[in-house]
Length: 218
Image (tube, rainbow, N blue to C red; front, side, top):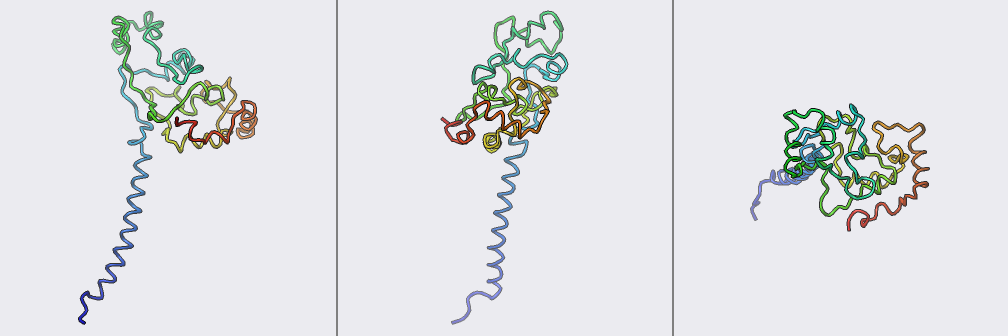
């Protein structure tokens, strides 16, 4: 019987198989790079807001405590967005004619809230409670980054599940004394891991339960 395929076909087939494997691996790598890029995660990307609010000015410059605006952070799941009245406590007296603050004044006049664009937005199937993290010594900057250095607010971390699980698996690397939760640029006076292990016990953090799916997914 005559040979149907030329002998070189074997080589072509082998090259195609190995080439296909490398192409698939390359595609997988490109997908992973994209998923962790700032385009997909929003990390480091400024979000346009109705008012260009500067945490750097208000926190570092004026020394305003996080809880002055985010009033419910210690007692509820949601940290809270300040009502316009909070802004006008100061801005009814200072910068009263600043053009950039007109949306604030308009909100106050019309009694319509400012429509802030959410920067840290978890999927609906994820449950996150601010109050429990604050009570267990998780600092604001651990998740939100150095907001005191942000002229405009942006995400400092991906908030991906793998990122959350790193803390849930090793809380001793991150937790701090509760009185330091709102301290920006906090540096422990002793070894963080040693201190963290002490705080894990002191705050009754059940490390083995932190990776249970039901902790974050109801």
